[in-house]
Image (cartoon, rainbow, N blue to C red; front, top):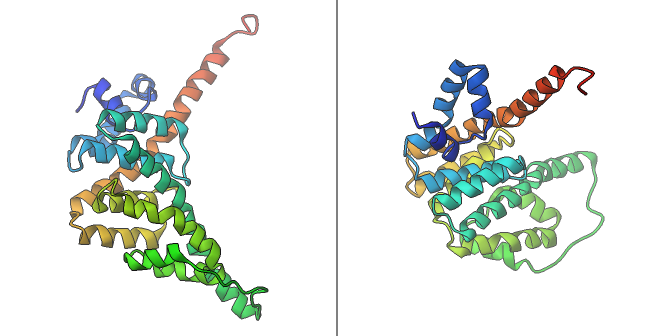
Length: 246
């Protein structure tokens, strides 16, 4: 297994691991071995693993500031550029569109059942949506909210289309990042996970590479220890202080 210093540099851990090793060495070692496996296995390049971990930490469904800083630092050390990291942060922002992917079809179904129709008609040019269709990136799951508000939908995809055209990251790596965001335990968006796994396979990703992405989602769970162990240590220290010393 990697040394303590390497573990902290190339895994999901902060300094909480040292405290865990003091309190429960057997569990800490077993957990460290499992959670650093996606880095030690070398199935994914280190930079890719760091960018995927960054996506999970920074995603709008997680917003973990300590983990985001740790993984930005690790990604930079692994050779990631500012633009690559910024791409990941943009992707983590735009995944919020799944609120509409989930809710818009339900709105249309329930409105139809209730005999309710729209109170206004919207007619507008939608060049960004048209561009997404032209490059083959339109998802039919977006049709319901396009139907409900085509102007706003186009405004949303005006933020997305430059990312598809940027070439900052290769298409396969974008799909792996998307799998991580959708499969993350803070999101678990099944339609997107399936769509991006399908796209990644078509782009040449192996089953082992995709499984590494899923493993990176799982090891994110130790953020519970990164957050809670220092707090527990502080509270135990507080209780050990006598009333006179307080």
